[in-house]
Image (cartoon, rainbow, N blue to C red; front, side, top):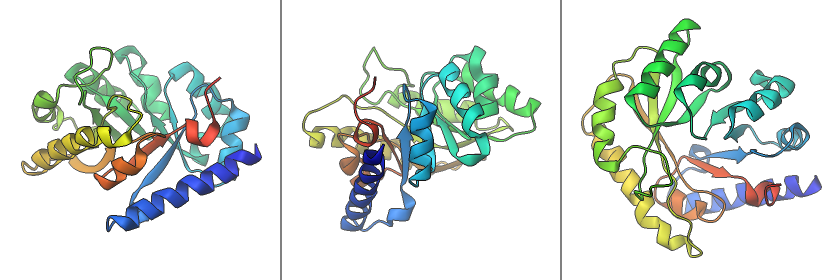
Length: 230
């Protein structure tokens, strides 16, 4: 457990250093501690060490941890693939859902959020690398998705999320991060109600510094913080 405190300090230091090096404010970048496959004790230790934002990939695993730790004690992000039939649970437990990629899913989230009088913050997941194994809307159709769902009253589109391919050399991911930024800018050029585009959720343990240089506001880090997943 002591390693978590040291790792968190190191990562926060690298985030701040990278942000300043490209003229950005480090406070504009949120570190999301990815806690899938980690137990509640590990999450609590990270919380005690100063982590605020936590990302979970699996609904059933997440609700056990969130019920034990307290929804109000951290900011919870759902970052895994979400099926429409689990939307009600996601809306109940998570402040942000990063992985909306269809009208069907957005409509169900809107419906479930309305039922509990909530405005659900969402990000649109873009399959920026067009990999068949990854979820997300096509880059070319992201604008169409925004047009179709921006009028839903109980969702607020906060930005975009992507997962580029893994590269040993993080520089190779830069073009994908830059591509997501271009999609964001294109959306901002056509203002829509309920669409802020404040966030770009991109960058993980191996490439988060490049992602920050290309505009990331949320970096999702698990391995560098907690070690390899069990």
